[in-house]
Length: 208
Image (tube, rainbow, N blue to C red; front, side, top):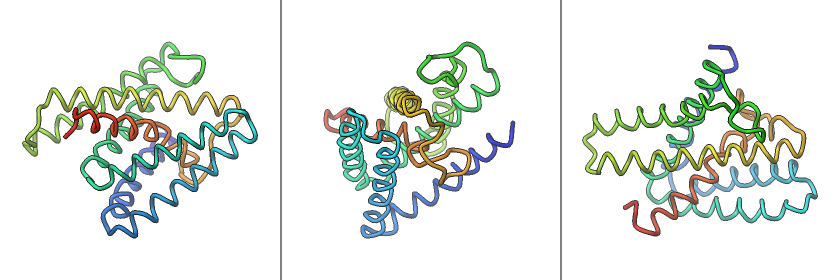
């Protein structure tokens, strides 16, 4: 495991409790945290999209994404579930991709491989299965695993979409505030798509 991979994993481990604290300490702290993340994401997108014709759609989407994040934050278990699934999808994809390499997944994001895609599904599925087994959480295991697969899929697609826009802008990272990841959008590229999707699952009653 190379140095960059280790830094990436450590950053993720450190960020999770910080996010948990920010979201559970109180409504004021939660609102401030969400607003800070929104402003940083908004800024990074503005720097990446510049005055491109598609920039406005990104602003609208970020606003909607953070709105769903705020709405879901009333139930911390849902927020943690989505975040952990996306983080493990990212770590699994990165580790499997770097370890096994193999055929490229898409030209849009040349670093993505089929091995990484498989790792992106494998790690969150294993972790969530273990957690459910240890806690005896009163919910259908099959249903939860289906949701994990769907969220992982959306997260990976979101990663590729942001990678596409980074390639259009000829940049590697959206910023440099998170060691091993780059900018905030580099870290939450999958989440900003996963939260609206999970919000939709809640609306249709698939998640309760």
